[in-house]
Image 1 (spheres, rainbow, N blue to C red):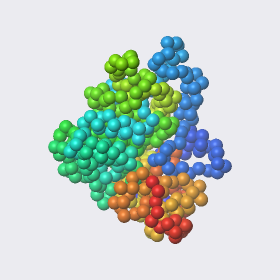
Image 2 (cartoon, rainbow, N blue to C red):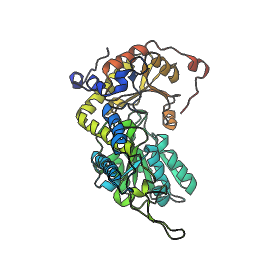
Image 3 (cartoon, one colour):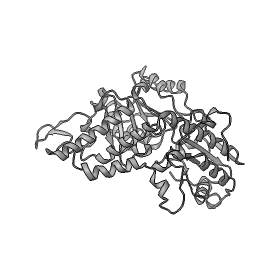
Image 4 (cartoon, rainbow, N blue to C red):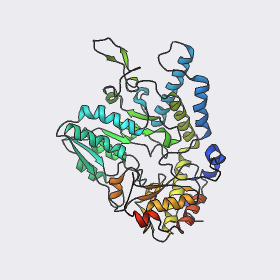
Length: 429
């Protein structure tokens, strides 16, 4: 087994086996074989507490919220707003009405681009993004700039996959109307200095949108301490259900946003020809029937993480990331991209020289290991490392050092396959 060296954390108790029983998919083995699941940056598995919250809502509290004048609807509304309060507490948002439930991070970023972005960005203006953004925090701003005639300015990361605060600040100028940054890179696990980035932007009165999809499962997030004007994340990456996410917005900015979608729940009253009076945020931004059960289950997931303890989650990440870095380094021809051990956040990306990442992923799958191979919806970032793609190990609270040992042994027997021989430069998103 590859052992952690050079760190006092090597002897510390971490999560792993102690929490695996909380996750039915890891215990029940629905496919008939053990599951070594190392694709948590794509979506995490769900603890029984979250599954129970989802089912129990439909069993006991299911009704449409906000508009029914009967007790069951009132109860459904109460649990929905309680879920909002749980998110508010988890993010340390100042006000309850700064939390908007959305389908996920991508939906939140598109909402912002099409509402806030169109209100503040015009012809000849600039939007600044980093060179490590997921397509979901790149394409909405790129489309916005194309529509209004603005310029998209990209701040590249360095050779180590890290973003310099001075480089980011230098990209800001009098024409900059908005900046968008990722908190944690979904490709390398690089943790950006968001507090310093927002401070640099705010000195020029530039608002900042933060993609927190990879941060929330791995570290406590305090939006006020970070100085984020907007912060987005997806529930399913934080052990919650699919189809629910969160948009945090500073109250003074959020309440100025026009409705992104219009319909039920967004208006005070409508006439055939008169002006429409919209309700305040967050309801104005939650048109139609919300994913109430998803919000309730997301709250259960956030409570689950808080119950595990952030110190233990961070220590767990550190042990796994450092062990994985050492395991990859011990495989001939393998190399880690970036420096994930600098501030471990549950992701290690690597390449195996002479073998297409899809062949590596298929080889690991044959050994019962699920990983992500390719460009991770961030091909512009991956391109800066002059590779066709990477193999990404991404860890959750239930992963173990023993699983990394299995990866280590499997990688030593990896050989070029169909992709390497016939499609050496082909890639998919």
